[in-house]
Length: 238
Ligand code: F6R
Image 1 (cartoon, rainbow, N blue to C red):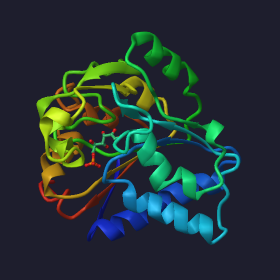
Image 2: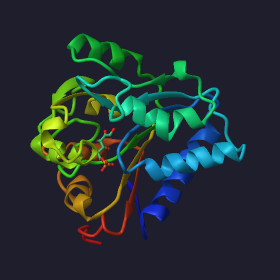
Image 3: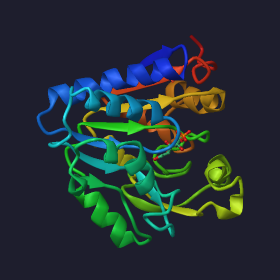
Image 4: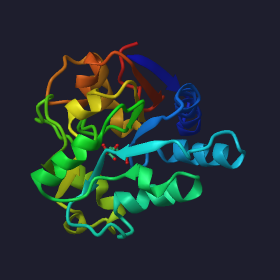
C-alpha cells in the first residue's frame, strides 16, 4: 500500500484527483469504480471542474458504483443513484448508458450486476468507521462477490445524518460489491478523512488481514493508494 497523509480534506481531495487524473490519461477507455458518501465529494468536484476546463472528456468512460440501499426508489434524494447524478454524472459528458449503479434486493440482481463488472481501471473507496468497504460489513468473507447485505448498527448510525438523523428512516439492507469484486480492479484508491476513521485506518494498514476489518483485505492487492488527512492518520504508528 502506498499511503499519503495530507494536511486536510482539501489537500486530500487534490491528491486523490492527481491519482484519478493519471488513470484517465493512461487509459483510452477507462473503467471507473465509484463510491458515494462524504469522502469522494471533493474529488468529484475536482473532476467536474477539470471537465469544465476542457481537460478530460468522459465520452469513453464506463462506471460501476459500489453499492445502493435496498428498498429505496432510484430517484429518492438519498439514493446513491441520485447522489452520483448530482455530484458527477449530470455535470460531465458521460453517456448515462455507461453508468452503472446496482439496484435490487435479490441474489439474482446481485449476480447480474457482478457479471457486468469487468476491467476496472481504478476502484475508488471510502472506509466505514467499522472498516467496511462498499457495504461489505465486518464478517464478510474475502471471497464474497456482489451480494445483499444487512447493514450493521454502526453503519446505520453513521448514515442517519442523511435521513433526518432518524435511524428508523435509514434502510436496513443494501446491495453491494463484495471484497472479491473490489480486489479484481487494476488499481484501488481509498480516501479517508476525519478522526472517526482513525481506528479503521489503523486496522486496515497495520493490523493483520482479518474479516473483522474488511478493508484489511486490501493489504493483499498489488496496487493500492491510500490518501488520508492528518486526523484519519492520527493513530498510525509512524
Ligand atoms: C459508499 C460506500 C461506503 C462509504 C463509507 C464511508 O458507496 O461504499 O463504504 O465509502 O461508508 O462513508 P463516508 O465517506 O460518508 O464517510
